[in-house]
Length: 245
Ligand code: FPP
Image (cartoon, rainbow, N blue to C red; front, side, top):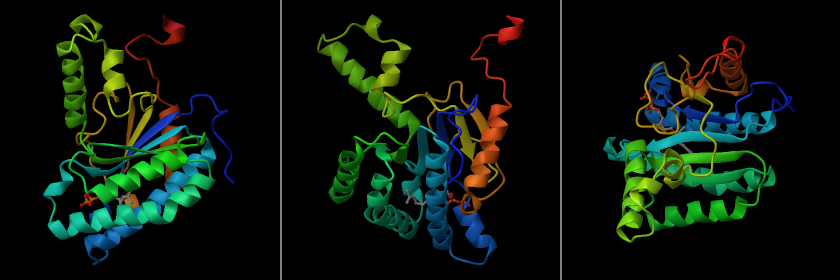
């Protein structure tokens, strides 16, 4: 078992990942993109295990964006099937390891069977106190913020709150991630350096680590490397360094 890092100064509490590069990994090997996605699930399993062993508190993974529906139908169907299979086969083991599963993203309009699977996984694991594994599915940050603003506007219209009650922390609590700490570290694999509509509000002061490796190559060692890079960063949150203040 890998040593815990919770007792190490400056360890991230919340790590968010954009798991990019499945398709390119497969194409490079002359394989269909689906092979890359399948290997991507293996990388997800390795990473979740490593994060849990390291004592990370929250791991948020971008599994399917609001924009991914525009991919060819066969690829969308394959990704949905992978997610269904993952929930069917892995939830029991995750539950046994004390992992709490949470799903963020827009559930309205999703297949009812998938919604039920999400709810069952969340209810089964909700008392667990280990790693919180947050799966972003049908997730888009602008859509999430829009839903939060609509909910707040409804409360104002119903006279439950006044516009002045709307503060950054109230907005944060109305997001799908309400109650979770903001990500300390965001990792994107696959060499691209952009956020792609992921956790835009939550990443105001997050440190970004971009890695050239394709997601199917990711593992506990690469997670540790990204955390080492993060620990060397000087986080100031808009202020000054403690020693120069
Ligand atoms: C990006 O690779 C990855 C995705 C769109 C989805 C990530 C999905 C998985 C890791 C597997 C399914 C998830 C679960 C939760 C079981 P890409 O296809 O954009 O790669 P490319 O940029 O090389 O084309």
